[in-house]
Image (cartoon, rainbow, N blue to C red; front, top):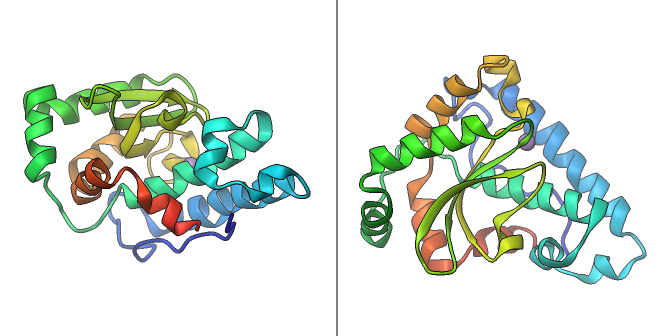
Length: 203
Ligand code: MN
């Protein structure tokens, strides 16, 4: 397992004005890097050090699971956003219309579910076992891979993701991310390639 911090896919100020460079600096350099450091410490000298990050998420427990999942979730979160103003196309667009009615309906549901996650967690667009799309939230470090679902996009709803820019106003953070930053090309890629992006970043 290659446990270095993967580079951000854009400059730290690229998501302004919706997320500031200061937020990305703290979130990436302190939080994401911190989970990498803690995971390294937790697996050192154990069989888990030989396992892949995704394998750890599917099988590990306790601290190893928590740190591995937080590493994975953050690597996936950075890629779930882009300054590039993407739109869902092709297979993803058809699946959204089939399962939610419209992109606007999906965005509304995502905002509602993300706002409703009590405390710290993550909101996700996933493909479930029946190949249908669903929106859900997970608590703390939990990840849909643990439950047999394929993540397509995620939004970090831990307070550290938005506090510097929005204080406790999670709804305004969500509006900025959902309306301006979500990377629908990444979601479409994940629908077809089953989340290889994170595995490749940590290969
Ligand atoms: Mn975070």
